[in-house]
Image (cartoon, rainbow, N blue to C red; front, top):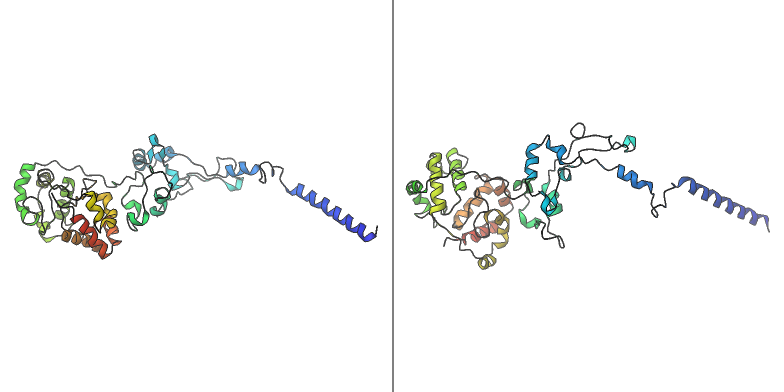
Length: 344
């Protein structure tokens, strides 16, 4: 056999031996334990996980938030819906990379030397679970993000620790005397109608209006928080008188919505009204006694009120954000939609 062939074969054998030896030397002994994976990496990856301390760890410093969470929908153990603090704020403990993440007791801890995240973009966070998706279980509350509340952050309407809609709890309205309120209401008929139904008078319909909302509105006018030349003067009454008026308008005067399901679907403002239904109801009846019913209001009044919210003349963070996202056409349409909820 020629010498150059012998040298070539020796070189190939030597290369194979060196390559095999290098592979054995540089490849960890657990590489093929789980197929083409390094078996020991499983324990190392597990050791690198952050340390979760649980809700009890957070309660000692955040009692109010913990109480809200405990009684809220995010802690519905009976239906398996539990969203703990560290899901949104991140783990309260970390692992120490300088000691190769082992033992687990090392690393920074909150609040000593680890600052937890306070989410600022709730739309991005909340929609991870609540954006409507095909196949997502219907039991999970879902929204179409673009139609729900324009570009408003979720936390404007929802308490993040107990995210039911009623972020602002309904005030405990003073129980008034409806009979006394009827006598006092005589001064209101010029703007609000003899039966509390405005019929395009300057003021809004007050028949069947929520008592808590009436009291809050009168208080806002009396303090100047809401401005109106007529109402700022008329609202200078005692808390007892305000409660009496609220009792009269809310219980003695009736205004049932004439807006039926069939009529709702046919109105041009139906799509836009989806942004309002959660608070004001599909038929103008509010879901919260601290918010106003819209049943019986005229289109002119509703357009004026919406524009005042948009301009900042009436101050409400929820309303300002929602109106900001409405075009003039949408504003007119949604006003027409609720104006169709006339009294019957």
